[in-house]
View 1 (cartoon, rainbow, N blue to C red):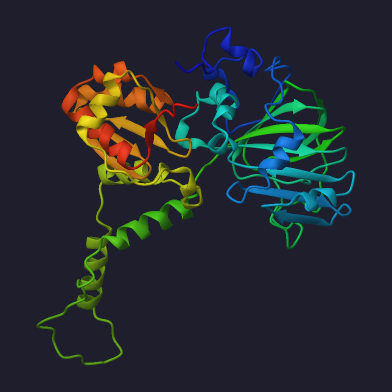
View 2: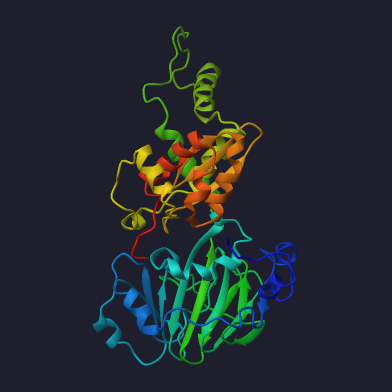
Length: 398
């Protein structure tokens, strides 16, 4: 079973003695929190050379941020080459590699302690490496982030005051600040953890060879949600439905938009926008579990699975596992359970709630547990997931 932060005294060490409930009430999206030795036993799961090796891979997102003075910053995007790294200066740069829990699943252990926050909110695990003076500059982020020091020392400065929209360097994708006056400053050691809510200005500088894990949490904006919903709604509209006005009276003034015309147009729009809370809830579940297109390479080639193959697999006691790029979520109502896998939905009977919760909570699934579940709808659900590559048999060589 998953070991994650709880309200137990032993689980509270991660949050400096706070329970998860206390942290979410008093700090989450409210104010920063520094926890000394939140994970005292942590060791870097990768060395700098391994991290650089991952940045050579075309499918793994990576960036180099190079400082050329206080107001001059260069951002390069991977994949990189060994020549790129050999040409770097000895100081004042950072390598950042994203989505590591998807491409290197064993690194997921760094996310597990934070799963007292909903999975759909977790964006990714990023690990950065920087030599002395390496940084990405003073900036703000639009999301919550936990910054876990893995190696070396880093000086963090923060400013909790609102950031003036004009206080931005032009022509940079890093949301860098022109002026930054810190209110607080800390030097963190391996095992220390810093939580920052969105829009808190912060500036981290490596004091020596330094590695930091960043656990980021996405929060879709109102604009993103509405745009995505409208795109989906448009795709389902009848393209032949048009404004119609049979039986209208002749216009006295051709420039007038009559009340009747406005009423017909508004009715056409209201018909297109008609949606209830149940429909929006279902759409939201599909939206937050949609897989990212650039992660398609992590999915196996399409295969048609038969029920007999599934039963044989489970009878052998084989373990199934979730694809590292897949997103799963669920919610229950009185008469059905809504299960979401990679942007698609399946509705199940209420007696499948435990199974759905198990699939969403775990990453590896025991064959004997699945075999003992309610068989008919369980078969349909597992075949649905297998055929989409959302779950897959564990590799014999793993």
